[in-house]
Amino acid sequence: MSLLFRNPLTFPLVLSIVILVFTSAVTSPSPRTATLRPGGLPFPLHEKLQDVDYENLSEEPVSLPAPTPNPSAPHCDYNSCRDQQEPCLLMAATQGCVCPGSTGPLERPEPPHLFRLWREGPGSVLVHWCAPASNVTSYHVRVEGQEGQREVGVMSRVMDLGEVQEGAEVCVQAVNFAGVSEPTSYSCTRYEPHSSESTLALKLGVICGVAVLVVVLALALVLWRLRTHRNSRARVETW
Image (cartoon, rainbow, N blue to C red; front, side, top):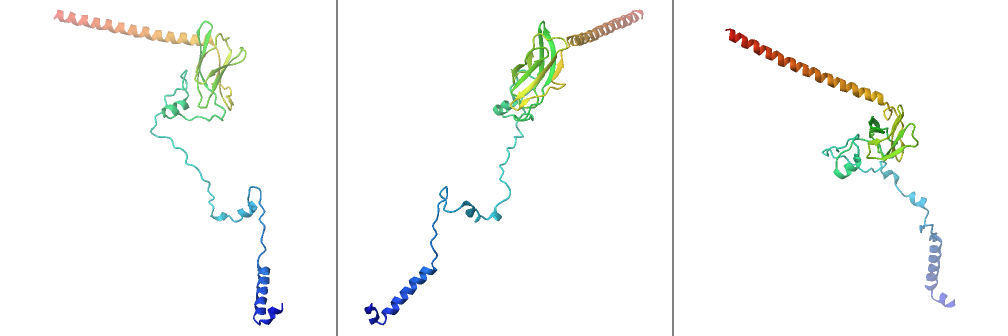
């Protein structure tokens, strides 16, 4: 210690170093220990989100452009009443054609249209229907007086019901994953064989009457021309 005070420059130098070290220790910030959060983040997520400038973010949602149908694509050769008709969506996927509008698979199908109910022969009654503008997976056919219901595939439009009692109600319902169509006045009808047979007889009678009338008029025209021709020949011979 006595050596430090012998040199007049030593003491001021040591004092300056002590003051500098003390000042730096007081003014320097204490180191913060970073505590790791779950996921390896050294800070809470809400502190990081506070630094985001939300004013510069776009408020409009990003939307992908919807696919536009090809206006030059032809319409699919689809007939909703044709038996064993391929589904139109399958035709559109394989042929590149355009289908008429229809409801989706998550919507309850619309009722089909019962086109015709008639007797084909002894013990055979046929029902013919047209598909609705809906996504359909199968059809249910219900006959009043018969147990249960019959199910056919999506391509079917005609079914043989066998023997059906006169006056029995026949209903056709469309089915998909969302449910079954409601029975309506145009998807259900009653089997009336006598009325259909009388209607057929009336049509045949009208056709036969028209044919007879045409034949009579043709014979009358032929006779009139023959008579006119004879009269003209008689006049020539008289002259």
